Amino acid sequence: MLLAIAKGYYEDHRTMDSLAKDWDVSRSTVSRALSEARERGIVEIRLHDPTHGVRDLAATLSARYSAHFTVVPTIVGDSAEQELDRVASVAAQLIGATLGHGDVLGVAWGTTVRAVSQRLTRHPLTGATVVQLNGAGSPTSTGHDYAAGILQRFGSAFDAEVQSFPVPAFFDDPAARDLLWRERSIRRILDLQERMSMMVAGIGSLTASVTSHLYDSDFLDASDYELIAQERVVGDIATRFFRADGTHDGITVNARSTGPDFATLQSVPRRLGVVHGRGKVTGLLGALRAGLFTEVVVDETAARAVAEAKPATPTH
Image 1: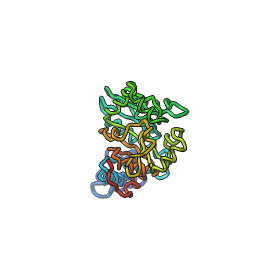
Image 2 (image 1 turned 90 degrees about the vertical axis):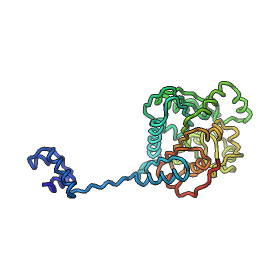
Image 3 (image 1 turned 90 degrees about the horizontal axis):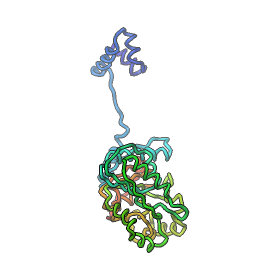
Image 4 (image 1 turned 60 degrees about the vertical axis):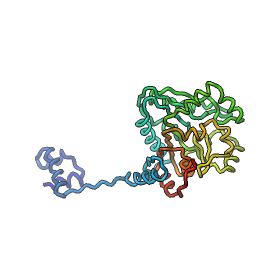
């Protein structure tokens, strides 16, 4: 009886109710029979955990780079957009679980962070603030609609006050930026950025499978791209550019950027990087070597490429 019930349930996928009718017993008797079949060894159940490998991978990367990694398993057949959505979902859950009352969250706009904002769920907080990390204006647009949508979704999720940063992504003249930075209205936002308890950012990259917003618009011109190539730039965080070895000195475009300088970024207690795709691997390695992230959420494919790369001593 035990064997017949076990075969019917596990091999033929029949319900307990139908098996109970066959044997003229109660459903609870069938349930007990299945339990006894397992106890006697008639039935063995084995679980194959598909996340076991990514947990080991995350632990290896966490130890190597002194940043906590969460690796999102790759699903064969997923498009780049689907994979980004799953990475963004995990990052959104992490932010919701760890952001606290009174915290100041810095948000760097971009394709990846936009995806994160769309996956946030309600987690009301008291006294929390969301502040924009870098300007979004370009020669043809204020960028307000794009950046504001991201910020408002963060604000709504946490009942947080939202502080926008109404400046261009890059100034034409570094002197103009330095002058504007003295204004009290702008100084207030800069002071708030210096009080961040957490920031969330993606990595801008020209080689990303899902195009980074910074490189998909007119923020930079041809001469900027030539300089970026000459100065061996591999990525940016909040429009601050860096090289593969984590250095950023002498990168011309940074003098015109409105994103926080590297000292400010590195001083934030929790710095969450959300990264997707092999095209971001070189940029992620550079960011880790610069000490820009304390936490990383990354897809499995990119994480394995990071693990295969030669470790480098952080530059910070």
